[in-house]
Image 1 (spheres, helix red, strand yellow):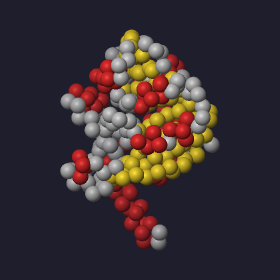
Image 2 (cartoon, rainbow, N blue to C red):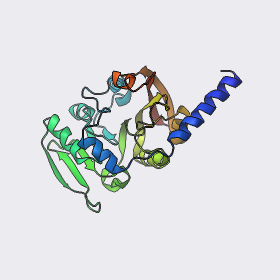
Image 3 (spheres, helix red, strand yellow):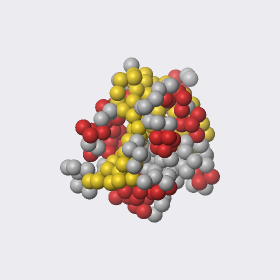
Image 4 (spheres, rainbow, N blue to C red):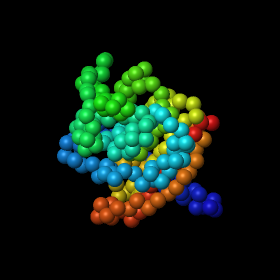
Amino acid sequence: MDNYSAATAGAKEHSVLGEQKNRELSLEDWLQKWKVHEIGFHKEDGHKLLRKYMNTFLNGRNGLRVFFPLCGKAVEMKWFADLGHSVVGVEISELAIREFFTEQNLSYSEEPIAGISGGKVFKSSSGNITLYCCNIFDLPRAHVGKFDRIWDRGSLVAINPSDRERYAKLMLSLLEKSFHYLLAIISYDTTKHSGPPFYVSDSEVKSLFGSRSNIQFLEKVDALEERFKERGFEYFFEILYLFTEK
């Protein structure tokens, strides 16, 4: 890339970040999305890139603790549980959590989270799936412990841009040694959409997570679905990174 192209790309990235940095959704906004089922981000058949890189992610290990930030009703949680791993998720929508257990035909129990008004924790009867219903920044870290793996898809890109540094610090604080952290982000023309999902640049990924992690680019795939074309998108890419301990 020549100096002019590099400068132009940098200016465009700065403009993109400037357009979205003040955009914010409240927790109530997210609750409403679940209430009216405005959940185009949910993948009923699971995530193809996770399936493709599952062996890379697990790295041959058994009995891992796997964390799903902003888990929704991700079907992939059952994938890991069925493989014998222990899954913990956090999600603000109680509706999403109940739908997960119902749709996966899993019985569960629920109880309040001490010290968090309105917070609840849901546990599968098998004991290997635990979902916290609360603000992710209220997650009772002393209770949840640390994790060997994090699958971050639809989470960093959903967090308000002003909260990204706080979010990254939280994620890094939850990691065990020898961790593997898979992050999926997206790239699109932000003049077509103000977010969420929000655009996150490669440089910001490195800024947020590079202090503690080795960052490996795994793949960039075309994810331009019909619903995006209808809204005027000309391109929509999904980019997958693997973080490992430095």
